[in-house]
Image 1 (cartoon, rainbow, N blue to C red):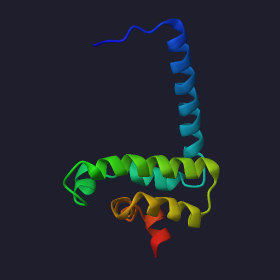
Image 2 (image 1 turned 90 degrees about the vertical axis):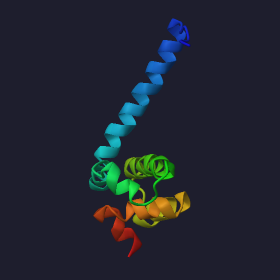
Image 3 (image 1 turned 120 degrees about the horizontal axis):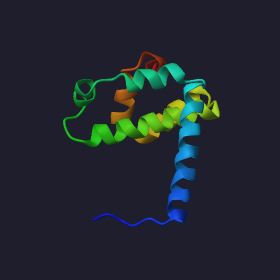
Image 4 (image 1 turned 120 degrees about the vertical axis):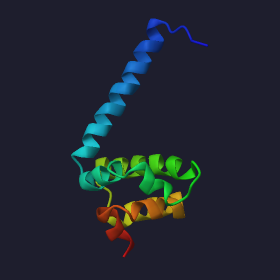
Length: 106
């Protein structure tokens, strides 16, 4: 069922979207640019090798968000590692498939 949006709803949507896009652009220019590209380059097959259910895809998405935010905020490697570990073992396993993030766990 479609929702009828008024001009104010669209204005709020566009504002939030523009903020998200600006943040995304900033993350690609930040400290973890290569790690983000590495994460985005993982195939569905590589991710599914970790766990066959959809848990890995949800954590994969969260991991990308964490690394993008860390890149924008210029977080230290130790702080990024801590945030990845807070996502759990599956996120750590995904991160270890990207050389720039695997370095954090050595």
